[in-house]
Amino acid sequence: MAVPKRKVSHARKSKRRSSVWKLGVPALVACPNCGEYVKPHHACPACGQYNGREVIAVEAE
Image 1 (cartoon, one colour):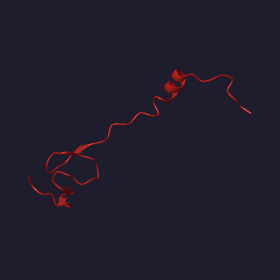
Image 2: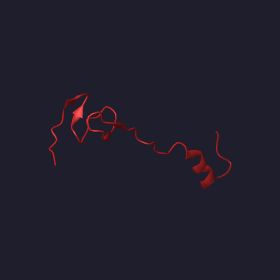
Image 3: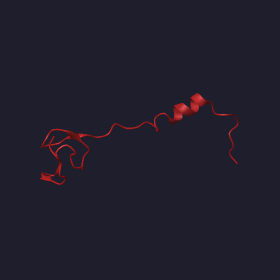
Image 4: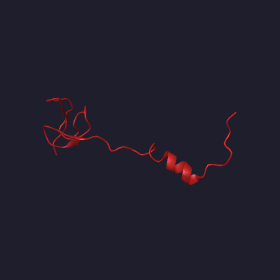
């Protein structure tokens, strides 16, 4: 059976995991209607539009 001969240090373990556990930057695109940044393939929370039509009724301030 393969068993580690010595304890893996905290620094060595962290170096190995450093690239795996990082969070990626969320992808954002500008809404073609109002210019607000939204997630791709999601309705805009500011104007309520998706794919050129209104899908969410948003009250004006």
